[in-house]
Image 1 (tube, rainbow, N blue to C red):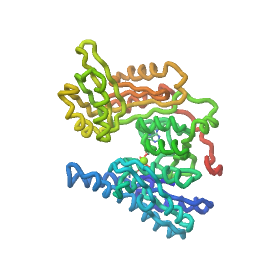
Image 2: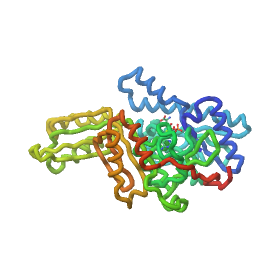
Image 3: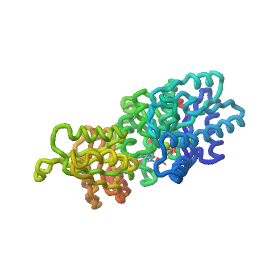
Image 4: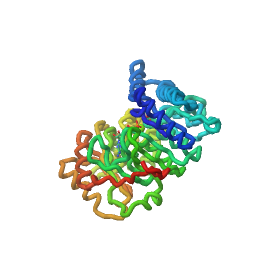
Length: 419
Ligand code: ADP
Ligand code: ASP
Ligand code: MG
């Protein structure tokens, strides 16, 4: 049972989370809770670091950031004691979450769950601090923003848990971010493939790596509200989710991101190996590249133009990594910071022509210019001006008629109990 930041923001909410955890225990389950830092704690810790340093040292950043989730776990354990149950809180390191050495965006390489298992065997409720681990070099690491979701899935996988429940401030995964489209529909079931595309294109409700991990280890996720008891969204394999769907909709959801930046390299040498060297340099700096386009204008005397997008947070890292190649491999670099992205995702579009044309028509009707396009069999993404993202999301959601009656059944998808 993972509780996000809003769900543990103050004393009342921590006590509420404690009661939900205890209720599950009293149903006979052994429970591990994974908690996020309270409210805006992580943002505040980042601001504190920026107040004392212009480029905070990544190792120290992780020492700092990992404290947020420790606070939540210790407090929740105290609240559980007051309810008459035994609880024990663990840091990521104590819980056996072993990661690689990339500070601030480490990847989990192994979960050594013996200590959690021992505590469960001793009839404890275990609370694990989300978003953190210990590196193979024995330093504290964090897993990137939203990383507590990944802690929860990784612990569930290591324990062979019957379910991984992600309790959050919305009722599940919706057909669009309900903050932008209030009439968005709660989706009863989403396949791993669709959720991967949704998380990758900006649906922050589940961290991308948590969905990757869940798919690779076949852990079904139940994403649901921490404030009400109704069932949320089950994320599972396509075969499991298909069983419950009469007819697959063409488009499942519209997602967006307002933290994109676009880099264009002009005058790139048009010869074998140029792209490899450029993207090797970015990979070495651990920069995640999203979309890439290359074209060779007929008029440019054989030189090429390469554009790519990165998260705004990675822009400086990306331009820094490419600077040494300027004047040689390419002539010049242009960065457009204020970009956004809107995407539509749906397994149904695999076999249905005309979806891309409709997306472009909808954006055209809104007077929105498309800077870059990328597609997968089940996704179409367009990079657009950041200021137009909300309009684009609403227009696409309406055009594909994604609002509709809530079809969620009133029973818990894992226990089968009526709610
Ligand atoms: P937590 O703190 O519980 O981890 P997050 O803020 O990380 O919560 O994720 C929940 C938020 O994700 C919601 O408040 C919502 O605004 C946002 N969100 C974006 N896209 C979606 C979507 N398609 N469905 C549901 N929520 C979404
Ligand atoms: N507290 C971390 C963050 O704000 C991790 C999480 O909430 O999942 O990104
Ligand atoms: Mg989150």
